[in-house]
Length: 489
Image (cartoon, rainbow, N blue to C red; front, side, top):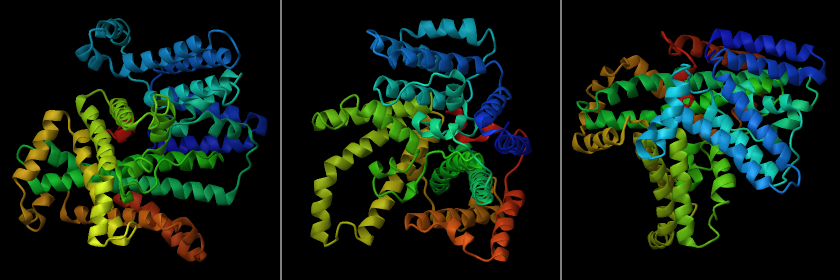
């Protein structure tokens, strides 16, 4: 059941009504039932792996939460079960190709995955990190382990965030599930606005950009350099609007039930450095890696060389988390190298700025840094989007080999799936997206501005937004949840 379907909206409406009709002691039970039903509607067979993963971590955490002699061994065993399932189900082919031990995964694939026609479980990359983080927190005595398995299962499979996050932290959700929640008109309207904006991002911006990107990248051998450059920029827009749009729908859906999910994006393309970018992009993932990988392996406290090695390790893991392919690892390595380069060039940057009379933090400096960061991120996205490292290199080579400024004016951009009118619609809504981000960057809340308008103006804006989705949204056959880019990760 896709976030983009009428069935999903009816499902949410039904759960919403039952949730507030139920006694507050049973509200979490309604959420659990809705979450399990939502998960089972995708693939009943894959649910067994969710149950195995949660049961393993739940049992391990109960022991680890005490003072037993084998706390470390039990914690490692609970983590190993989850990592093995993730590796076997998502990375078995990649592991078979690059590791001698891949024969284990080969037998698992032929004996279990292919025999029972199993698919990669929905959200396995996301809920695995949530479970590993929970187990690590219990091991560190950050909080006591949950002793009710069903409540723990709700934390793992809460349906708004199971598909694409944000990656949940137990202490952020557990207390909210136990609180008494009452219906509230203002909160409901806020949640619906959140969802509608997510639908605009996904269906009006991301999917329309995707048509152009797919057409150009699909013919990268014959497409001109300018078309490929524009396509790479549009892919940066597509993946941002797609992923943040899904997260907005998820956050809005959770807000209907008075549950707050953590912020996952904060105007990432306005970042002034790669380090700043990762404080704004997929915040739940980057903060997870910082807390559970980067700092445990030494962080930046054991010398500069060790810091650089740790950065590369974290970004390699991040690349591999996104997909089983070398182009994802190269994407991660690029971001790691970007950060290391920023550290190394920091003294030179300061001296150059001082020599040119540019003050640090000035508008000029900020604009240059933001542009440089966006171009660096955009370059890395080419490897992320391409089907292989070879294809990505071919695209980059074509961009520099066959550029033509005439492509911007001769209408050739309209020959890649989008008519002139639809291309202009994409540009207009992309401008709205960045205008909204700029306002938020300045601390101006668009929702609060809308809420301060008269009733007539507010409802004109609401109807305009809804009908923009209905009229300008991209529809088609085979429209299902996997159409979200991050569903494949």
